[in-house]
Image 1 (cartoon, rainbow over the protein chains, first blue to last red):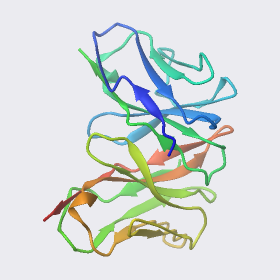
Image 2 (image 1 turned 120 degrees about the horizontal axis):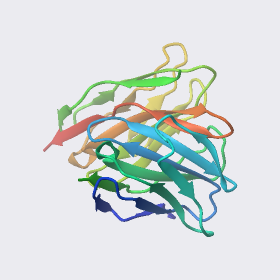
Image 3 (image 1 turned 90 degrees about the vertical axis):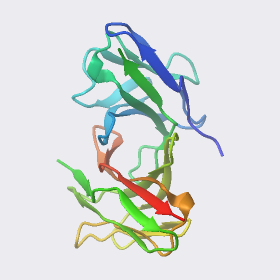
Length: 115
Length: 114
C-alpha cells in the first residue's frame, strides 16, 4: 500500500538555526498538510497546501514557517530560525481530494529537537 | 470553534477485556469523524471512519458509531489483544478555506496486559 514518507526521522538543531523537514506524499494525492505534536499534547494543524499554494494556515504557522513543493514529489516544511518551543513531532499528511470524508494519510513523523 | 474531547488515559486492560474509549465532539455542520491509532515509534494510521449520522465505522474488530444526538463517536472493541497497545486519537474534519483540516483529541493511551 502506498505511504507517506518523511525524512529525517529525528533532527537535532541548535536554536536559531534553519531546519527543513521533508515529506514525500502519496503519488496521486493533491492535498498536503503539516501537523505537529508537542510532547504530551494533542496533534495540531499547521498548514494545508494545494495547487502550489497555501490553502489554510493556523495561528501557529507564523512568518518563521514556510512550505514548498519544489518538485513533483517532495513537500517541505522550513522553519527559518528555530526556537526551543518548536521542539515537537512533525507529521506530514496527504489526501486524494478535499472532501470531508476522504481520509488523510500520515507519515511516521520527524522528531525535531531544538537545543 | 470545533473541538474534540477524549477520555483521559492511560487505559490499562487485561487481554480479552472489553474496550471503550469515549470521544465527544462540538461542531457546526456535519463533519466526518475518524479514529487514528499510533503504535510506538510509528505515525498515525487510519483505523476507521464515519461520514454521516448513524454510520458505523469498523476495522480490525474495532467499531464506532456516529451519534449526532449525543455528539459522540466512542471507540469499542469486544476483546482486546496485547498488540492493540497504542495511542488512539479521535478526530473530526473541519472545513476551512477550501480544504478540510483535522481537529484531534488529546489521544488515549491503551495498554493491554497478557
